[in-house]
Amino acid sequence: MNPEVPPEVPDDSAAPEPPERGAPIGRRVLLGTLGLGALGVVSAPVLQRGMEAFLGEAAQKDPTGLTGLLPNGGGFRYYSVTSSVPRRTAKNYRLAVSGLVERPTSYTLAELRALPQTRMVKDVQCVTGWRVPDTPFEGVRLSALLDAAGVRSSAGAVRFTCFDGAYSESLTLEQARRADVLVALRMQDKDIGHNHGGPVRLYVAPMYFYKSAKWLSGIELTEDVEPGYWEERGYDIDAWVGRSNGRDDAPTT
Image 1 (spheres, rainbow, N blue to C red):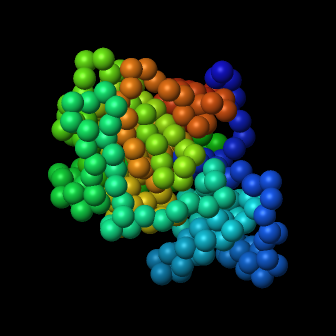
Image 2 (cartoon, helix red, strand yellow):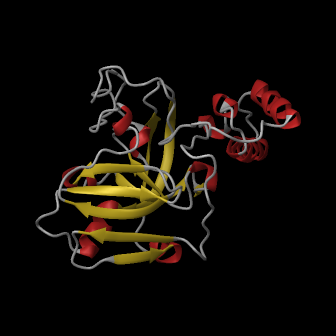
């Protein structure tokens, strides 16, 4: 089901769903978070990074979802569909390429960094309306990983899974091979941190940001497109900016 007007849920490729049970957020954390929110996005880079880290940590411990309403560093907000997300480092991160391929592969973070990198600077557009202009992303073209794995003729789509244990996304094989679709390692000219879906996330430049799955752990070639986490909840599967989800935003390409 793809309604003309998508559900009113913010999305940085995932959005908060408070768990049924959990300790209430502490008064000090809530007051401190609200105080930071009142400041807005500050201009000093050091303070910006500090606020971003604080809000990311607070959001993971906040069953109310209130922290998701506050501004974060660089104009982005922290969203997750789970109450917490495990962390991955260069020591334990792996990205698996599997499914309908001739050569299933698993990449370490160092191996991904050693591959040719592509940098692009485009606006990021959320399906709920907010936009962050001129955002640099850098990483490996998804098409390069598909070519290295040897896609079988029976494959028609790519499914992406994430190490939060819940989120997923999909693209057609034609969409996945576009030059502006990256397995991203850097964002805003620095390594992608945990709160932005690092160390590795998907970046689908011409589509709404929910397609750019955070905490990427798996790339699986399938016969057909499988609806992702938000498509199962009413978002459009083909999520072109300005041409889907009942919105007319300016394209990001």
